Image (cartoon, rainbow, N blue to C red):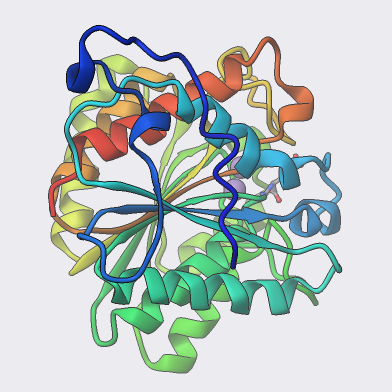
Length: 310
Ligand SMILES: N=CN[C@@H](CCC(=O)O)C(=O)O
Ligand SMILES: [Mn+2]
Ligand SMILES: [Mn+2]
């Protein structure tokens, strides 16, 4: 895969040298043998959202998110790499999932942490597959910040099915399915989806229980979940944020979880030492307003990298 670095441009604060660096001055194309770091990997895909009857445009997410990350101030953290983008431009989502999984596995085996930029939430299936293949025998806990369970059962993979697919694959592999969904909106999930979640042993927290004054309870629930697993896969569906903070998604939230609460919890996961992979999905620049959504998404990605302990 050739790695296009042309979008990594931005302001240059000349005088202060090392101390004045931004992401675009730090990110390197991923190469063999480099020091362990964070590897940014795109999954340019509209197919999941299209099949799920959503508003397409997430295919442009990886490029738009990289551009939003490029100008952020860099504070010392692990080395940052760009690992390129896996495309799904022929409608064959199953094949694209396999390519994404292989790229993720290779990143992990080279000692890096994948930070995957979707794509719709179908991204989660390929990402998880790659992590699971690289972490044999480990109990993986999935923490999903999302207004939706994404536990739909359907004849084919969509952006609404990834965690049902993962649950089925866990059963096939004789592993337990450990899934915590934070920010679930009762208005956006039918009773059938709540029943599916309960049957699969999923845990969740409603959006209305994730206000700033309930942060301690949310932290406690998250800590218990993280303690109960070996490693954590973090997936952030940006539609968990209120529509005013995140207009740039297929299904904006009328209520949503404030970015300060999401950031506090995401940072806790990053500090846990158990994080093995993270993604931001559903970003659709077509519906952004003056890059507000891109800036919110970039802030969350930045927070993960800033707090990461490995
Ligand atoms: N990624 C998943 N999305 C939601 C979409 C809901 C909607 O379009 O309103 C789901 O399938 O539940
Ligand atoms: Mn989702
Ligand atoms: Mn969602």
